[in-house]
Length: 271
Image (cartoon, rainbow, N blue to C red; front, side):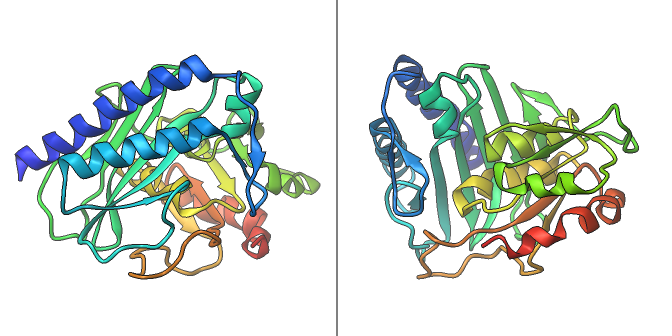
């Protein structure tokens, strides 16, 4: 199976680099329109989703694909990729250089590999999380090929915690860390994985926002907490995930869950 994991990483790397090059050319130049759920989309999102889907199905003919801009139905395939072609479309259209391409590979409904590429930062994050999958393969989380790990620090006013736009009510109470708002769900969580922040919260992320980073965060030593107390994975075959949100807390280590969870668990009702 070693060759399989090499192919998976090569596909993710070459496809996101190729697609990212075109997206850089479109960066800050396209007008966005609103979808039914209120999120933004551009022709670049749709083009990138199609390009990534075609690359996956050409390489792995027995793999399914669930994409933000295409099908939201989780297929019956043992292996399925979940695609977010541009995570951070608002940043992308407004000329803010923090946005990324996110790919998560699931085995029987649970993510086992995640890859996120931020083209303008030239940062490639990826990781493997094979626990309880029955699979054998690589371990760990990486940034541009170098191992990464979450922070072991204790919270303080010199440490960071990331919010999303829908979680600012957190600030109505005293908070143990400085706050940052990234505007990109995957990067919010990746900053915890790489040790830059101690935690983060997303009030209404979709499955394509979290499939890849769920893997990378845990492979880096962090903890991913579903705030509505419902296990996210494995996904259910045949279910439409287009409207489902998954409020979540991420922290650099399990010991910090009781520190931060009481401050953000009201977001479980954000759906």
